[in-house]
Length: 195
Image 1 (tube, rainbow, N blue to C red):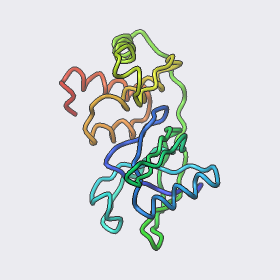
Image 2 (image 1 turned 180 degrees about the vertical axis):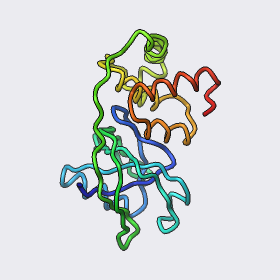
Image 3 (image 1 turned 30 degrees about the vertical axis):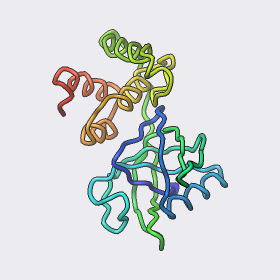
Image 4 (image 1 turned 120 degrees about the vertical axis):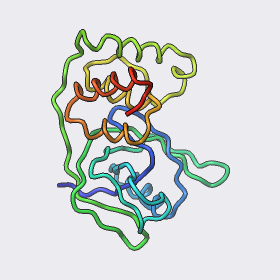
């Protein structure tokens, strides 16, 4: 297992998707400097209980997404804005806190076989293409519209841009396969996004 810093958040990061983060707490500023200096990654995991600013009270999922920092900007208000790219899903094992509250943990990568796009994915492919064609999405979006090489990418891209509640996002992150994720998304779309 590898050891990575862990960033519990109320939002979920997915592989193949981009995410903007605003960093201001000292422990996360330290983490950012560390991972950028060493060209390393960190893990974003869904926060299940507690506040983002209260590390001692946090309970977070045992699954997360390994991300890398692609870009950063210092804002006029002094906050640091990070642009991160989701790389791969991971399981989090043993975890511990450092003196300033930063979490670290033993992380095991969770690879999955690539699944081809099928005929039954047609409506979800059309949805993704329609979203990419929309002017507000095509310019600046975590979707980062691209060709869809397989069902895995489609499932993660849709998960990252649909207005899903946190419980649904966690279900996607925990799903065993792209087929299962796409079936969940299809079901939620049929039921007005209710998980």
